[in-house]
Image: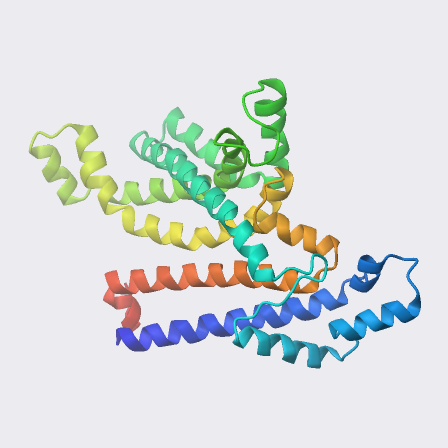
Length: 310
């Protein structure tokens, strides 16, 4: 049964990635702008432009170009950048570590913010602590990255001078973009932790732990928190892909040399192959993380893979 579930999820993931690839391919060719003109300049002769279009295969119909692109992908060939003439695989390998570093740090920051806020809101339900914690969560989930980033730069870099304004120059340069990217996730996680914790606060095993004379802090952290980890882990797995998509804006704001900033640069240059490859990388990572989360959940709870109601 688990093997069938695994095959179904992999086939669905493949279909989603293929659909994203095709959709991005056609949308890019509808965007105004000519990559040949960007490469040669507006003053280039028409004959030179035509020759370059033929050399790049841009003079062929879209369905032919799509077929060639999919054929190259089947051989794990991402192509060559129209702008830098470098293999796209090398460009991705250069930028990917920075994005992974930012994503992991943002996830850690989100957990460090969400777990205390969620537990505090549940333990102090109905009090000012609860309202304050959930107010912070609502504030975090409501603010977009393109506003949060400049505000953190204004306060942390310009007013206080604690962190660099932009770039990737050590640990301190990672703080502001990680907070920007992790704040929304922290808000979602804190609300989830509060809700799940409230469900287990009055369970029999919690009363038994209190009856044994354990301190309330031990009861909450050792017994309560452990039993709310499953939905939290599931939500974290589903939101990891969102961190990658959110990194596009965050990396642009902070000039972080990752996959997200590479996408924006390639769009400005009309570098179709690079945009397609980066979007493929982001979408494939998003889908893969979702599939792994589904598989982990199905392995933990057999009712998921059998279709039974929880």
